[in-house]
Length: 163
Image 1 (cartoon, helix red, strand yellow):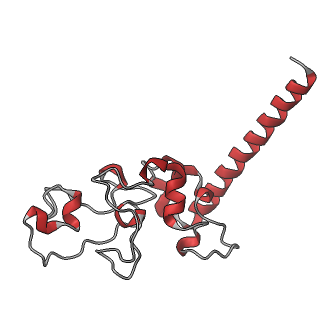
Image 2 (cartoon, helix red, strand yellow):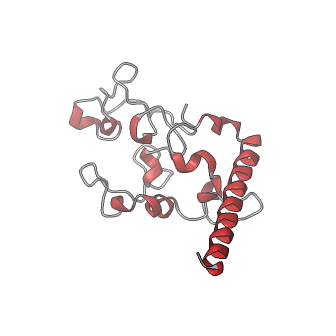
Image 3 (cartoon, one colour):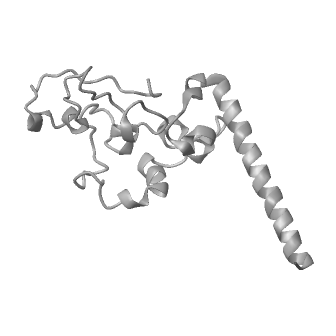
């Protein structure tokens, strides 16, 4: 191997090693205050790299939760196959109003928790057959009429950290 290639490989390893160390340090700094995030088990990118989506506390952003970009922009950076419509019946991925929480815009996190969840596919709400009226169907939360559910079901609590 030439000296140029050896130097490039060595520098690349140093840069990568530094980036990984910085990321770990950032995560450990984050969980000092955000300890509820230490039980992350599902969304791999969120497990150790908060700064993939969130800016540091000394940075002001135009987005909620100090997000670096709008929610769907961040989600679609990795989940490119969803851009033309969700895999489930081409469900829309954005809109003016979240049907369960109309004060919020409809986007990826209307249905999915970007950190963790006890439900499959990081689904934000518990729809389990045993403990909820949603018949084990995630779509029944917003589309209950299709499943024969009454219109006056209470809005489920918004799962923030996977509880």
